[in-house]
Image 1: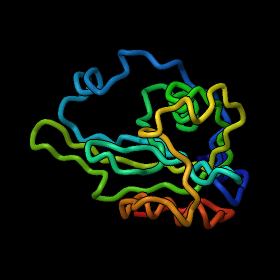
Image 2: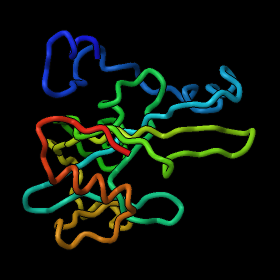
Image 3: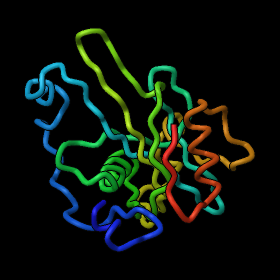
Length: 180
């Protein structure tokens, strides 16, 4: 962030510096909790806005209610946030991503978890515009109950939060936004 400020860039960057370490099993939340106790945690999630010209927007089934939303994954300790998406999409689909630009950074109460004395977590979503540059598996080989492309005008209902991602991704602004 200091580099971006010093360079007086219009948009925040994310691609400089180390790509981060490889994901290790010991980077889960359990060892994190062992280290910091019950202090509140800000947990970054990387979210992908992938729009293919002929296929539409890539959506993924989300959470317990299995609603459609944009692919999102929790950043692991030691990872660079853009590489979080690269890792997870490759694991789940076999596709290689190029992270093109930062669309926005979001936090709101929908992403907050407070389960009494157990965990106090604030989720921070970092939305990136991404492009698939290598498909080692065809979309028909990936379970359609997990990932599907939808034309923007025929997308399924999205939560208010993912609806914001949809609008901001399609707006294709030059600069990133910070929103709730």
